[in-house]
Length: 247
Length: 247
Image 1 (tube, rainbow over the protein chains, first blue to last red):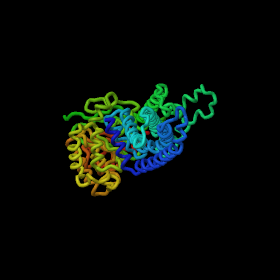
Image 2: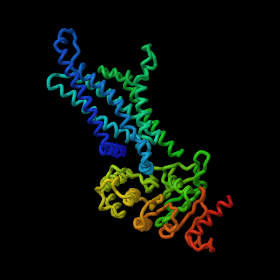
Image 3: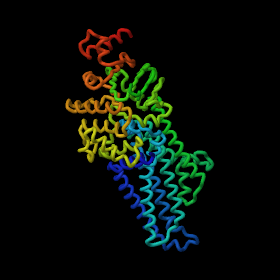
């Protein structure tokens, strides 16, 4: 049942121009950035040989690419997640799900997985872009895998929070702005924290993504993303359930 | 006596301090069309939302074919079809896609979905428009799609909230004959404030006013109770006025 809802979400995404435009624009921006990184690498390649332990192609091209993709997702996810529940509420289509013999958890998980499948597609394009480097050189697959995992976990956290914010309102635009604010806030929350042990670093999404970006898979960071995702999915379920109880 | 398919006892619903529905009991039998009648704001929609499991009652119990809707919502909702006031339609899907989704959500097994969709389309006169986008259909056809999604899984109880609102006279006649036909195989409860609709379609009527039931029985009983009134309309107005005087 979860997959039926996920498939429906994906279908509605692709039947509107929004999904196609976001895919095209993201792909263009990321490809442009990728090209820039490859150019920069080619320019410094001869000097790199002078170092004892020079950074490799993957570190200089793929890691920054994923770092930027994280920033781009931060801006793109609110546009995609805003309609998940807010639009259904606005068009009063939520009753189709609420009157059907399905649990609210299934509705929320279905919508979550539907959007994740779409974001997975974006990550897949990034992977394809990175692998294209194989045409001229070998790349560090471990570092690539770390980045892919980090980006997927980050996307899951964004989607869960965006879904929850979307469940709070009947106005998709309000949900989008709320989500963007929340993502940015969580991204830069540690900006003013001078003390490296500050708890604000623990809260920051960026801080947890950085270790994946360097290629280290830290269970603490992974656990943070997973807990973050679960927390907001549970809150979204509670919110929808409350609506049935309170009206 | 035919089997009781829907049994609601002493339903009440408060929204904050306001009581929208107070102590309403309903009973529906197999092969019966029950008309829920009342002026605007009488609590009809709230009552139907509770019967469809989209809104939890503040007090009272609902049984669908002997299954408690609040205790076992999944089993009970599988026997229900619900057309809310605003049909929950996805404008970007085709009629076939949408009805297929509705059937899957109502847990029609995958091999039977196509068959269920075909039969729902046939019964609602949608065979010709299966490939068209719902957003491009006229209001009458959209309303039929709304009814089709409520009956696609062959439920025992069909709940229709103002199924003929906003339609032209020919469409109204078509929908009424469809409702009568549905009443033979299923049991139907429909709300309306259009009195001739009740006379032409319903076997039994319940009249609501200010959140309470003021009459329950068939048309003859209403006439017997108010012999001075020549038409249903007069009896209806008389009943609601009585209520206001006593309140």
